[in-house]
Image (cartoon, rainbow, N blue to C red; front, side):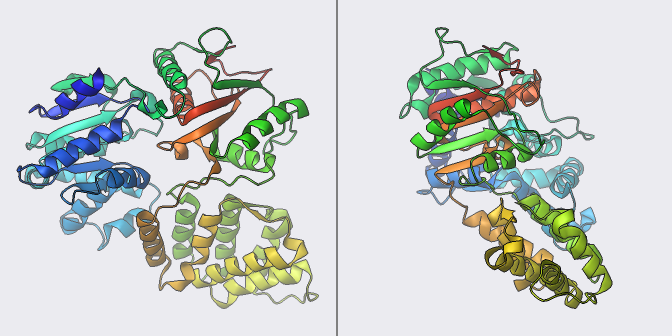
Length: 508
């Protein structure tokens, strides 16, 4: 059984061990158990577990909480730590973390600086290897070329590296650099001193074991370029329900199916208390939220992309009410619906640009929009933006003309509204991000998520919708996304497949 051989491989003296780790097959347990054994021993230094997300970091922390000698970090935080220690030689600002947040791919660029530093000065990597003689890498298929170069530098300086990765869950964009693309799976295995593969679906021991076994077969099909067989009588377990349904909405940002199909979907969703609805894109997630009458929230995860963009823009446009109004309209358009350019945005920008000098009839919609704009005219900074957002929240509750403004990403909206409590937008973002990191939000009983944000999550029941030729074409990325989505559920899975244009990844 692979559990036994992987246990032995991790504890071997081999410098580099690579473990292929399908979803739900015990990767986190194996990595945490090994780290605890190391921490309980007499070897100097502290084992380091590197994750790519704060959610994964929290899971490992829970699994190793009895040990204080295990360091668990995101790889971005290690990059920031090294960059901060050598910022002068790297030519970076006083706070590299702030510098990174101010740029679209700031953490990626920062990893590049650190990778080149370790290449020029191996002693830095040596210090990392001495402090952390064993490094356990979680979800390494998501590492960029620069992040992989950092791990390789520590390996070359004597650290023992244990890599858990799954090529079928590689769903994030690769980067290209002078170090090349992030290590592909075959190259990674070729470089390893020892390899193994987890192959027992532990996640489904307390759910549906037939589903777990079937998902491993489906993974193999998707990995090798074959199709997943959804036909009854061809191995599909009873826990996998297939619903043929087409999106018949006329608008591109809406989702609607015929009533007989909707009843099947609603019956499944209503019958289960723990459920994730998974889809390909943010736009589809918002459309599906409307499909369920906004009764199921969006899962926002840890990242706040729209908030990051807003903070960069507000910092750049401080003192310019018109530009700040454009920034706010863009932000609200990302986290809410009903605040379109025609309904509110154009007037808000006009009032901000003109200084709110137009005479407006009291209590009318134009007067209320003018009141929002006055927040920016009187204080064209992050504080004015924060005041505007809080005022908008009040209008949503109290003014009928704002009744169609609906929040989809509540947490992101309210985090933006808190920025005014801090001296600077950047300082506010840093503190809010810190709080979010160390007090991670709990997954609601029911939620809608795009597949990228759902990676690493588990639920009892899941719905994947819609499965069309456009959402899941026959591409490597689509195959990986489909597998990540299918492997979230431990009990039952519903797959909503288009009748007229089904995904070519299925046999129907």
